[in-house]
Amino acid sequence: MDGDPVFIVRESKAQPGKRDVDHFEKFLSRVSRYLEAQVMPVMVTYSVRPKVERYAKETIKDLRLYMSFEI
Image (tube, rainbow, N blue to C red):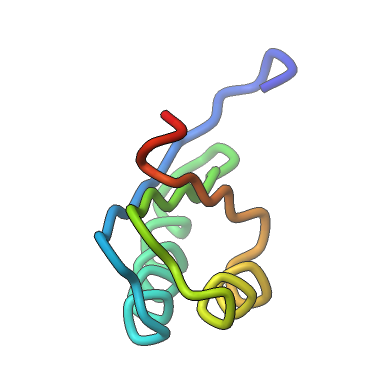
Protein backbone atom coordinates (compact mmCIF):
# COMPACT_ATOMS: atom_id res chain seq x y z
CA MET A 1 0.00 0.00 0.00
CA ASP A 2 1.69 3.18 -1.17
CA GLY A 3 4.84 1.12 -1.70
CA ASP A 4 4.77 -0.43 1.79
CA PRO A 5 4.11 -4.12 2.41
CA VAL A 6 0.68 -5.08 3.73
CA PHE A 7 -0.60 -8.34 5.15
CA ILE A 8 -4.21 -9.11 4.28
CA VAL A 9 -5.81 -11.17 7.04
CA ARG A 10 -9.27 -12.39 6.16
CA GLU A 11 -12.22 -14.13 7.68
CA SER A 12 -15.16 -15.55 5.79
CA LYS A 13 -18.49 -16.52 7.27
CA ALA A 14 -21.84 -17.09 5.58
CA GLN A 15 -23.65 -15.08 8.24
CA PRO A 16 -21.34 -13.72 10.96
CA GLY A 17 -22.51 -12.87 14.44
CA LYS A 18 -20.96 -10.76 17.19
CA ARG A 19 -19.10 -13.79 18.54
CA ASP A 20 -17.45 -14.29 15.12
CA VAL A 21 -16.41 -10.64 15.07
CA ASP A 22 -14.91 -10.94 18.55
CA HIS A 23 -13.03 -14.09 17.56
CA PHE A 24 -11.62 -12.41 14.43
CA GLU A 25 -10.58 -9.33 16.44
CA LYS A 26 -8.68 -11.49 18.95
CA PHE A 27 -7.02 -13.38 16.11
CA LEU A 28 -5.95 -10.09 14.49
CA SER A 29 -4.42 -8.81 17.72
CA ARG A 30 -2.41 -12.04 18.19
CA VAL A 31 -1.21 -12.15 14.56
CA SER A 32 -0.32 -8.44 14.46
CA ARG A 33 2.32 -8.95 17.14
CA TYR A 34 4.36 -11.12 14.76
CA LEU A 35 3.94 -9.24 11.51
CA GLU A 36 6.28 -6.37 10.77
CA ALA A 37 3.98 -4.60 8.34
CA GLN A 38 0.53 -3.09 8.26
CA VAL A 39 -2.34 -5.56 8.64
CA MET A 40 -5.46 -5.09 6.53
CA PRO A 41 -8.45 -6.93 8.05
CA VAL A 42 -10.97 -8.23 5.49
CA MET A 43 -14.23 -10.02 6.15
CA VAL A 44 -16.22 -11.69 3.37
CA THR A 45 -19.80 -12.75 4.01
CA TYR A 46 -22.91 -13.80 2.16
CA SER A 47 -25.25 -11.96 4.49
CA VAL A 48 -24.82 -9.79 7.58
CA ARG A 49 -27.37 -8.13 9.84
CA PRO A 50 -26.96 -4.32 10.00
CA LYS A 51 -26.47 -4.49 13.77
CA VAL A 52 -23.57 -6.96 13.38
CA GLU A 53 -22.07 -4.93 10.52
CA ARG A 54 -21.99 -1.79 12.69
CA TYR A 55 -20.49 -3.77 15.57
CA ALA A 56 -17.78 -5.21 13.32
CA LYS A 57 -16.80 -1.81 11.92
CA GLU A 58 -16.70 -0.31 15.43
CA THR A 59 -14.74 -3.22 16.90
CA ILE A 60 -12.15 -3.87 14.17
CA LYS A 61 -10.17 -0.83 13.08
CA ASP A 62 -9.94 -0.36 9.28
CA LEU A 63 -12.11 -3.43 8.58
CA ARG A 64 -13.07 -3.96 4.95
CA LEU A 65 -16.34 -5.87 4.74
CA TYR A 66 -17.39 -7.39 1.43
CA MET A 67 -20.47 -9.31 0.41
CA SER A 68 -19.52 -12.47 -1.45
CA PHE A 69 -21.56 -11.48 -4.51
CA GLU A 70 -19.56 -8.23 -4.81
CA ILE A 71 -16.26 -9.98 -5.37
